[in-house]
Image (tube, rainbow, N blue to C red; front, side, top):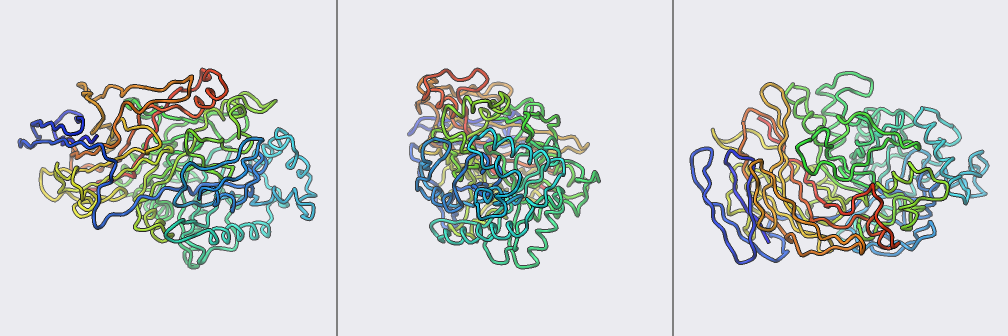
Length: 630
């Protein structure tokens, strides 16, 4: 089923859908006094629109930890980087934690192991009697068979790290060098251009006072990679990382950084001051843009698109909020601003209007943050973040003696997301290039397909043309781009959107355009536009759409695809456009409700879903924005 609508009237947004082989026509009064017909075509096919310049969508993950990461090892992970790449290609690997083997439902297109640079491989060496690290005072506890003992030792190290305390024995550059080169060589060994793409990567894990400033650092290939991965123990300041990255480029490397979990940063990730408390400048914005084109908007530790306190009029703002700092005591953040992507986009265009550049011009991806080698993003196939969570009972009830706060934080973990990339080929160069130009989007796990184009010359009929993608590229710009200057007085940007469900997941509920803008007085605004949806629902006077329904059977941990649409498409034109105002637009696609992983786990145990967890969730996809600059 495909929904299509043109909207330039003064109300919020409108749209409609119809069963296959039915067509509806409506006459709209346009703001410029013209009338155009909006046509609706529908199809039951999931065939993707084609075109001679079409890119392909590739799904993968680049935020993946193995036993080389200190926190993964102390939580029972045995898997190596080679195991991670085998899993991503469809092979079964040992899951650990007394649970089953891990196997993905469908192989991924690209993957990157990105173990922590901090103490890279050090804890794993403590179990090797031939390694000097086995003699470290922490070794007996780190390698203990009692998970609580091992995690207690890890917690002490993490707390000391957050407080700026360093153990020079653990911070061994020789070990970092050897393990890092092994990670790079393993990525090269599993890379198969055109079939399966891998990248050398590591995580820079700045964690000042348990506030998350983490970044995945991704290299296009092994040409020019450094001899060691940069640890945040040298400095917790992201500007230190960017300076290091610029030096790597001078040495021949091609790389970028992807920040994540701003929701756990307590306002630091997208702060309006530097790490040292100085005002942001145009130079700062340029360095941040150069090094960080993407933001990981969703992963196991929650979704950080927005928060109800920041977006009180967004009925879907409370999705999978993981509201914790990175402490072992379950501490909560206090600051919302600076912690969520939509507010960062607004602050970015506001700063740009002040002549300070836009430090937050981020495209979006989803990812995992698995610490068990397997990015188990599939809600029906979730195996936990750590090896010790590799069973339904452990995920819902925790380990013996585990504090309730930790158990609850684990229950609130999401299943993880996926990075989606529109690229010309499944190769390192093509996928990395798409990331640099931000032609990417993130999903909360399902392989939803999503195209989004903006321009000045689209027509209503373009949304249902078989050469949709070719028209999008020829007449406009894809997600991640910037539109500059309206070509004619009174004109407004128009957008084409096409989305199709993951055949292994729920039908689609709706497609929304989220607009943010800054007016002439510097005030920030946001508005949610429903532009396409399934069924015969109608918008109310406020532009709100009735819920699609909910077929989830909690007792069985199942649902029915008897509601929703397999695909939706739309043409939309901004009814409130002001050519003098900076703005951004991004698309959010929602599925119908499906069972959360915790609901499936409870059903497998014959238990009721815990009272403090949702029974169903609406999985979704977030496109990279398209910006408008006067």
